[in-house]
Length: 448
Image 1 (tube, helix red, strand yellow):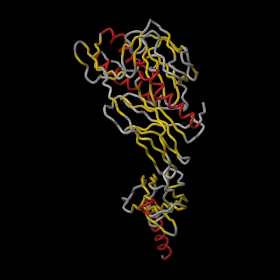
Image 2 (spheres, helix red, strand yellow; image 1 turned 135 degrees about the vertical axis):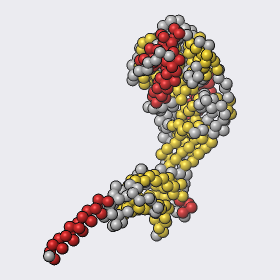
Image 3 (cartoon, rainbow, N blue to C red; image 1 turned 45 degrees about the horizontal axis):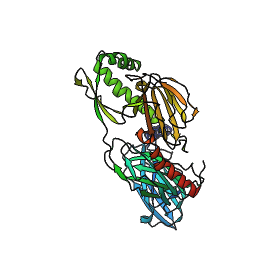
Image 4 (spheres, rainbow, N blue to C red; image 1 turned 45 degrees about the vertical axis):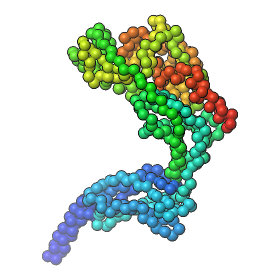
């Protein structure tokens, strides 16, 4: 009888233990701590992103400490985690000066505890250098004047401890490069000022070291607003049937409504094509400037369409609502099937069909500068080809959404369209870029 009772109690205990284990009340595994960087240094303001997780039964508390000179300083704690939370992301900022940390070695300690009966605890620690000195940043050249839709150039010098640097224009951030000078601490880049901004925005050069210390330098410049053209374009039934409808159907959209067809092509398909262009021209693979002198305009051509022309469209006397669009380049027309030359030295990064832009070629010219040539009949180049200024890369035609034979020519800087008129101007190139670039090369030495 006693043996049966003992076995019964043993079975009940095993069942209770199994249920407790299944529900996580009893659990032997420790929480996991994942820090999103190899933490080697902290500065005066160091932001650390990390994730803590526990599959069973879930998290209970998270703490972060900094240990230095026999002092154990708590910098963060979360002891109110709701029951059952399996994973949580954190972003904390260590304010070193406020905490009284000094330059030298320290330890950053992460502690996580789960909600099991055993209270499993895990720790993760990093030995770090406390560095409270910000990097050095000295601007050597910057634009005196810039327009909406324009391009600016900046050259600057940093200390050797910099791990991230660039220029911020308003809320946009652009890369700068150190591959064009012998001194690796010299940086330069071209950056765009968006055409849709009508007011002056702050332009700031920044440099950040591995400890998270940041130095900034605001550029002083004069902002000149350009008022771009606004126009209304009349659509014909012939244009809808011969141009718009085939493009829509080619992209998988069908409709008997001419207005819906046009809205699809000019809004949905346009966005797809421009997203591709922006993505392609955001990938900078050539840091050194390949371009020399002014960019070439299509030979013997006239301007048909201007940059940043804001267009509304009218069909049978009525404006099509929701189909407005900016024209993000310049249209040049010459003779039918005119030869198209590379506007400057560069490398072909795309040659193919591109929806409303038709057959198109995109060239990379270095420093984040790209040019695009659209509505071509055929290509004379292929992806990867290195071309010289004046090389014939295609011939004009009416592919895409072109109403007549012409070249759509655009310039993009780090993924944003800029006014080509500046790049076609020999004096602008000389005063804004070449003269300053040569001056800095003489002072510090160049790689070219």
